[in-house]
Length: 279
Image (cartoon, rainbow, N blue to C red; front, side, top):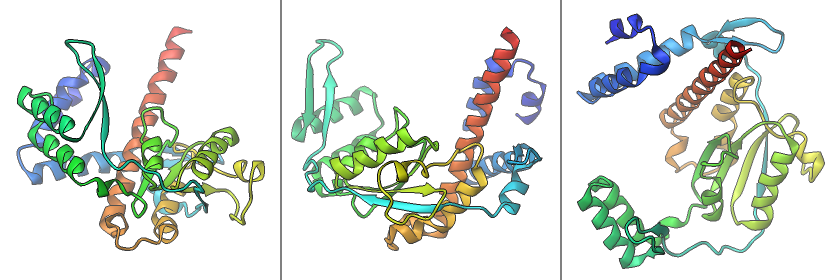
């Protein structure tokens, strides 16, 4: 498969078939899956260039090993009384009739069974949904920590996690208006907790004095964000029994973060190349 990828001349338009082959090979065994995933990570670390603030270009692996900078941590908590939903409710529009409804309770379980029978979702997904319906206490997320990279993403889970009272560790650009929205939504419209990177120590600042020091760039500040996540967040969250704080889980979290950064770099590069070609 590697040889075929090396010979591919139209990668932008034909990468899909190679991706499918990679997934097929990964599905053969645990060993294959781990080897292929590790190979991708190793290549990213060794091949990607990282541009430092002074303009010097070094390999991504070197950047992560040599750059020791980090961020301070700000944390705010919501003041709204705990009013989380006591049951799962899923908005649903019937494809055949156009009828809109909100599925919950036994009605939701019945629809999940129909989805499984039809093949819309796999059986284990259906069982997981039904388990949550039958155990509404699982909706209490106040002792669970979620790291959101690009916290204001339109398709991200920020609003859902906020509504469930989770501890959200948010990373997004250093734009005061953005942090004003995130922080005020948590403080005044939730019972959740929000932690975030800051360029200066958090001493209880409020309003604009707080917002202007928040945020970090996933592409430009990758090593610093990685260092911050690996060192500061377990201390801030103070929930040692949460699986997220096991060393292996945190390594997985950061690997996933690095993959996300790699995708963003590739997408940015493609846009730049496209714009240059059109001018």
